[in-house]
Image (cartoon, rainbow, N blue to C red; front, side, top):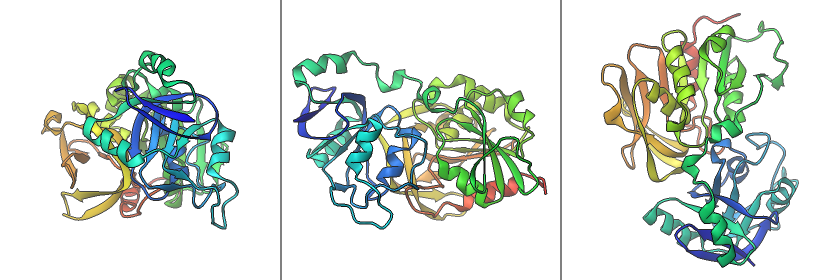
Length: 368
């Protein structure tokens, strides 16, 4: 028997999945029907126990190509049923086997619909997956630091610079000659598919630790700078926000997800925590410039307060159709834009891929 405990005292019982250990994290739900491998390896899920609302997870197995980082990032996983007989030509192993191998704790056989409804009503909560007696385990859950008290960007960012090009990882001293642009990426919790999309548009990416100061960023002579997605409370990142502020007006800037929140703070805005966040592959967003609505992939628990954005510095360009939250902004006096969702998808629809090409066009003449 394995248990999922919530900080409000609720206990759900199920069957073991993956590693045999305890897991503590913020319990969130993802509504995507596919993409469980990408989700579990997405650094933005660091510190979170991910509950999949789709009832059968693992039905197309695990393959070697769909990881979005070098390791599994989630704190734990909750599913209704983990498939033990996957069917897909790329599949090499079971979800259970991957979790066991990578030390990720999961639970299956619980009522994921009931848990999701509880989170939607009461908001996200800290939780624990354990094989221990719940009465004994609750003490550890209550003593644990909350999600909002931890700087998860520090945990997931690269420890040293690296390069990414057409073939993936490259030696950082490789010549630039065959690329159109040089992009510097501040890694706040980067997904590989972001680098793949820029490489497909002729960009070589230099990926730097999130806390790299502006003068060092500019020392790489970028044609543009990207602030990547990532986990945690954006209000805990003053050093990265200052870097964004120092770069304004000196190079084109693009922010994705957490990068959007960082840019908005650099312009004077504030963020707040959503009740249960946006996590899934079917969130409609309207571009206020064109009126066009795209279906987007999202993974964030915080949003930008539009009333906090200085009207002379920032313009809201996109809104979430469901709840009206900010999904994109433009800095009026600087070449800087950002979006709250994931145009690289992985998983999710490709509707918003054109924003990559739009930013590459802003990156100047480049090197040829």
